[in-house]
Picture 1 (cartoon, rainbow, N blue to C red):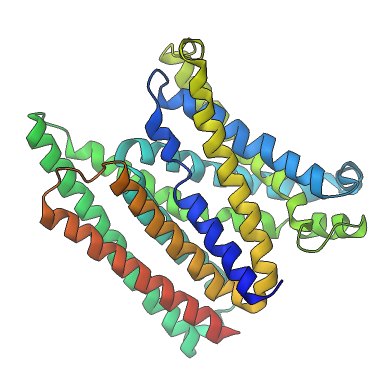
Picture 2: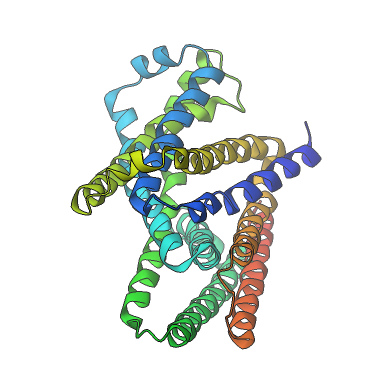
Length: 339
């Protein structure tokens, strides 16, 4: 494979993740907590373990040879990332696919790019790449603010149309959760970075370099699973919604589909970056983020999230998305210039 195939895999992965939570819109008898329990088990436990054990030889020996401290670091960072995954699910339920994707992906891109710049490469702040990255971050925040403002105006207009006085504080609370989740989302990359020794052990056992990173996924995502299970089990118990699982068992296909799509897309992107080389952390990353933002917004339009919204409000969101895409391109250029 070469650059063309690498970009194709990246585009496919971004498209899949951008729309992977559309099945949440298909719920009838099930509530959010029913969907999210099954979704979390599939995406964070079953699929990553199956992929790792199917693609990597002697994975049990890899984990047996790894010191407890080596396994603990990606697991603990995975727990922190799990808060972001949980927040994403809650936000999609409250404010929709479009706004959640724009805000979370925008902030994740900004935070994920700035963190290594300040902690590991602060000398680049005075260089062209560093200045371009800082400028892109400012542009990204403007885009996030525009999308958030459009969402608030949409909420107010829909409340007025329905004759209901919804609390603006409730919307702002969800926005805060979206911001926190966007900042914590980048921790998954840190969790994987701490799994470098596990990857080396997998390669020593004969794993292909493009697949060796899959050995870290089960450990890091298991940490994220803990947070999501605790919260969903709490909701199922306090809301007495355990019985929904038996009322329409056919709905289980929705979270299974969404969860499988998410993890498979992550695996595809991980493999795609191998073929892109240095372009994987610059142009490839930008393409991945842009695709998720665009597809998330298209999915939101398709599922009717902006239906009956005044045209000026929808236009504000479109402008915000355009600004996010510009910022993402700037980040890709900055990363490319740094290499």
